[in-house]
Length: 412
Image: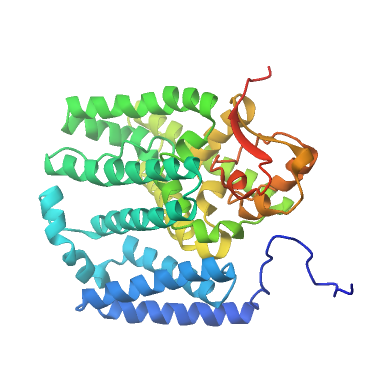
């Protein structure tokens, strides 16, 4: 049999030919033009909503059909990123969509809608809709069904309804499923002072809740279950990545270079937020003499660079280009802490039966965290990686049942 040098013999599907740089620039311009058209329809929110939905569906279809390193993928990526930029910093063109949600906002919060209510509603709706799609896709796998129900539940109840109800009762808007360092301001001195000063008993409870979850519950649960208990069962970022991001999971870079960049970036962000928190507390203890007026600039710089640009614009907007776990893999400080505990002390691992592996490559292809699972399976070596979120898709797509998610004993 004659094959060309570029022809792949892998049983798993391969990526289509890449788009040239000049084509990417042209597609980005085209997508920005489409975004401008949508934003110009401010007085027609229904039409805006329809166009945004069509753009989103186009990107999702591209991910499912073409692995999305394609024209539609770049269009969707730039469009979603641009939409996030407008939502975060230039919400005026979206005022029609915001007002469209006024009745629901008054019902839930007792106040008019704003850009953040639009964000929360859109985020939750996308998780629920795409979660139903995901459960249908893996309807024969109980683990996938239950963890999808879990992330849908936590997103709807704890990240959308409860914060809204708390605002309706004149209490602080609080997200119980996010902890420091992911929700970095929850341990900043100014935020704690505001909570305990403005809401007293409720504020003290919320501060204690955050501290207990960050320093007690997270290590204990991760020791027993691995980081999957949070990243694949509770976290809202993981909820969107696992549902709306599912069509793009195969786009994660599996190269050694990507892994090296991942280690430096995610631990760099963790060091950044730890130092920022310590400096802000030291400045508070010194009554502002250490940083002075720069303390607000210091905290806001992290909020802008990491909290908004990285986790929001890049972390979600680049789904169709870099895969569904860009933020979780390269930037999330919570994932970094969970990963350290998982790698060093956790009972969780993915066990392999190398004798049954046929090297089809499905496991590596579908790993959203860029782990070359196949290489572990071929060697019959258990997978204990800091980056693994325990989603179980590698096990679900394995045709021979080689991979199993288990809680074993820790070898000291």
